[in-house]
Image (tube, rainbow, N blue to C red; front, top):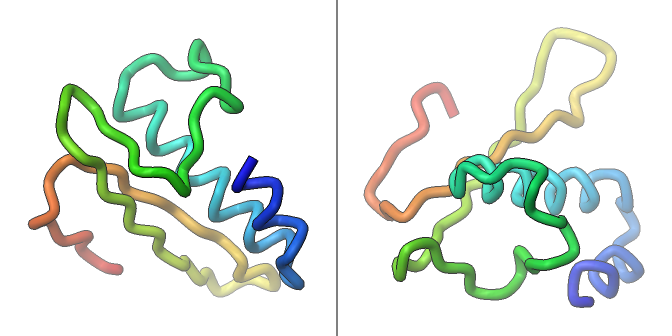
Length: 87
């Protein structure tokens, strides 16, 4: 898949994996199906739709005052006019 190919090209493999994972997590939360949706049945690099509307992803890097700052969160929405407060 495109996701596996992208991972194979990326020097920062853990960071790339986290971005893919958080997009998948945001998508299955939006649909309400959770882990009932097999993660290999959709590709976050392709145009995804929900109820006929195109989805937008916003990946946000989160830094805490700890030794590990490679946290990411993702918002998945059908609304392109939103703002993530504190991002």
